[in-house]
Length: 235
Image 1 (cartoon, rainbow, N blue to C red):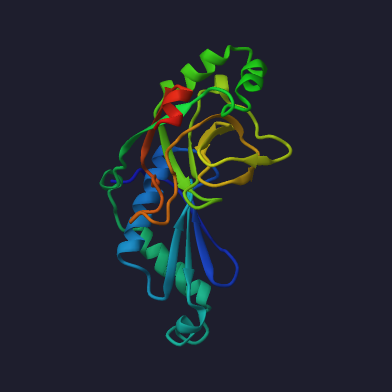
Image 2: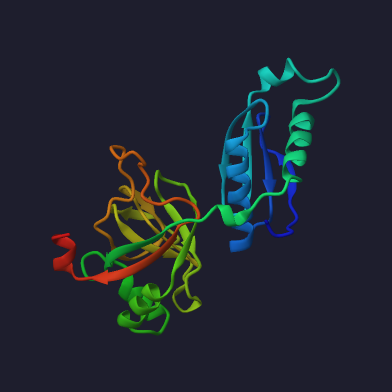
């Protein structure tokens, strides 16, 4: 069963409603969010058009015009959807039913791919080798996808290598592995980015030709492992 957690519900514009379990990076909360996401995906609320999960919240989009035709006079569409959502969230779900895969991702932490590795190591008063060891020693949870197709927000990184994002974004290449705060992630496409780039993977995190375009999904577990530049170029 899901943990006993509290949430608040509020409107998001005039055609969406959000259930928020708090602004946090928490595996128990994220497990509940994903369980509720699955619940609503399998049995949508009447009038619902889409449900989107984040770290600790769900947003339900709905068809305002279609709902206005079916709700009682004097009731707003938002109040109607809030009641439906409250009733659904009272139903028990099993967070254990949403089990992700363990995916191992090769990363080259060498030049020219690790553009910020040395500066990050210097700022954290550790060697580059120790930074790589710390980054590859943990298994990270994929909390959500967003920003770009297939971009993964994973956590939490060891405090010894955590670093606030850069003040000015720079152009980042596909496959670049970065750190921002207590998060780590992989850029699937060329993009401006403010994360500290410590390596690059030869894997394609997003490919529209695949049956499942995104390599990773929320709830997956990821472990990075180090490869040489030669291995990267011949992967």
